[in-house]
Image 1: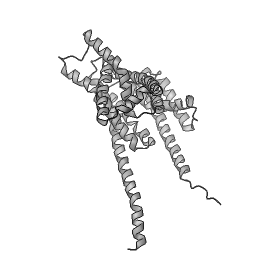
Image 2 (image 1 turned 180 degrees about the horizontal axis):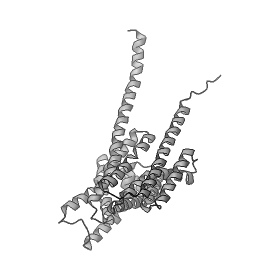
Image 3 (image 1 turned 180 degrees about the vertical axis):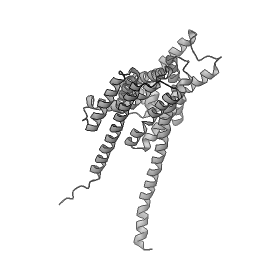
Image 4 (image 1 turned 120 degrees about the horizontal axis):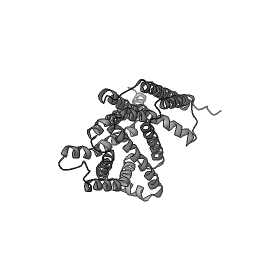
Length: 321
């Protein structure tokens, strides 16, 4: 072996190690992403178990136990300084206050949808969410609309009209889209932002829980340990998918996450039809076919745009003469 070949081998080793590390991180990201969206897809099973509890109390208990669990996680990680800094920053606090209202609306609507056997409509909301993001990008952020995006939005709109503009689906899609828009503009990570949001909601949640106990209307009572355990588990149900998603987001490209996000509403739809036996009329199937076609066009358009962007980025710069 020559000195040159030894030198080349040593030069290649760091890049090979970096490539292996990137591949390992990507695999971890895919696993975390699938687990995250899989958990969100299966979450109707949990809410079906507490279907006998009013949506308002489930929401209040979810906020309280999420606050307890996330507070514990932040304590273990030693990140309370970031929480305090966020609470002291007026711009961050105002933005997170607005996102808190949207999050509460989204959570309540979803809990109500599951408890009233409207999981198909809830899943529809999350199928529509990326297309609502496109509309927000055009109307709020003044982004240009690509041809494929326009076709997808029109098809989805027709599907919504066929369904009679389902209120639950629209509320879920719009509230989550604007929630994402607000959170995108706030300079805090996912864990910090969610804990601040639960801190803002916690006083109202605890006041409502106390009111229900005082009025004798609370499901969280000592003689029903199963319901108490289920309601207390709402913190885990909320926090675990979020933490998995955060881990995935750090390791995967945004485009990859964009494809994985359809796993959750797909699972929810299958649960609604195959397990919960929600009625699907011919009109519903037709509307869903339009919306699924819109989603497929959106995905193909996104792939094409991503490929074009990569091709432009990979072009060598012209050499200086």
